[in-house]
Amino acid sequence: MNRAELDSIELMLRDLHTRHDEIRHRAAFRGCTRELLALQEELVQYLLTRKDSLSGR
Image (spheres, rainbow, N blue to C red):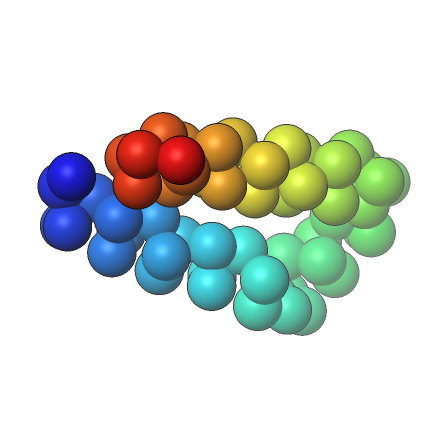
């Protein structure tokens, strides 16, 4: 198990669950809010799967 990698995954998950109003505003302006949120969810799922893999689950 790579502790540094697990820590980085935890930090990235925390960042993905943080509301970034500036980015959301830009997405709304460009008309891609739905795509941004879908991509965010896809990244969260990927990171959770990777975390489970590294944890031996």
